[in-house]
Length: 554
Ligand code: C2O
Ligand code: CU
Ligand code: CU
Image (tube, rainbow, N blue to C red; front, side, top):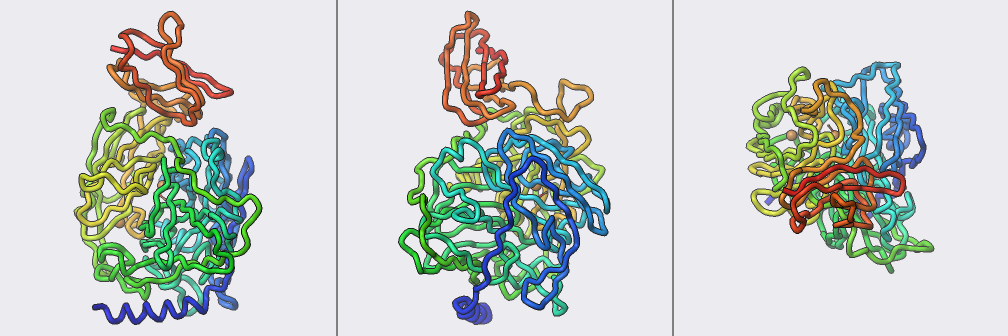
């Protein structure tokens, strides 16, 4: 059918067995109160003797892994030592607009941007990358990006691999094209694969269950990841943290900016080796990485190619040997409680050498606010792809849940918290998201296509969050407990400004009429259906803190 592709494919797999002898670089993991990220120009040798001009964050290429803890405050000083403007975005984190680091934030050469925010997200794999106006692709292509691993008590209580660099590994997959002078081409698609900046890498893993935190950090390429011989793996987390239960897969389609944490069971395989592949031949022609009818060619399009060799060594002491049957306890938002709906239509046409894509018919304009959202809102967004190409759709400001894909429930691995959703041609996807805690105070949040070339080509829009009760909104973290709706006839959702462990509902006489213990979330549901009408006091606690508010049962 596709003689050229098959020919290249067989060459690739022959080459695969002989090569992949470079030890995978593992960025240092830093767990500290204040992080200094020095963004600078470097020369790095991806291949011995070949100098490549790069950008990095306190590194020649990429940057350190930042370890955050839910409920703590994080402080990051971003020092711009580049000769051009930059900034930094904490992809997936629920932070105030002031520190979100979208295009309105400009950190000039020589400047330091002092960022500090409370870590509100649940345990999971997030990442940072620059987001300057029209220069995101260029700066990310040159190498500025890094992982953020958030840890929390709920995740820590599970028997999961979490020893960084031993049984728990960050894996960012990027494609690049090297020019004959050793530098990177500035192009959407490359023909060499780098993992954590290492070409043809291998990773030494112990013969036990290991955890891979997969991130697609590529400009435009989408990967259809799986292991050779269709060896099954277990997805445990999506963009915004743990799934509620593990999901066994033998493929995962990872679009730009998306993360999936997977467990791979290597028990009893000491001495073996296993290849992580991208099965590009299985991608539709509408997806960058599939057969190139819409975009420039690349030797990697539409073929199956190796990404990372796993070499299995001796197991460690205290190895994880089984997978918990339940994981997170996040409650997907209830559509019945949504306060507003919006529709976002992706349109436009891409072809070789020309592409122009829009959101609701518009290109990004820095001084146009496309959406105004009320603080505390829970919104359903219907995203429709009526263009001729797939787009990874990303919303800043936190996580959402996918309600449905073309009218059907999303696959299980897509049912956790997300911040990027891949929209193939013709797809209609409905997502539900909350806009809690922070008003925008002059610093809007973006939503955009995470194909970096589309993003820089204005396939982006922005929203602000306003508090209807405050004339001039201020960026301040929510100090109190929020409930919605009140009065209610049935269920309320609450949001506390910390991870709660216990919840009480008291009547007017101070009697406890309902108690939920063993919580590990800042948000949840309380069913008041069986209570008599009247006012109640909702008390939400952690070991150190307590907040209360009135709730009315109609
Ligand atoms: Cu990964 Cu607008 O971001
Ligand atoms: Cu983002
Ligand atoms: Cu796009």
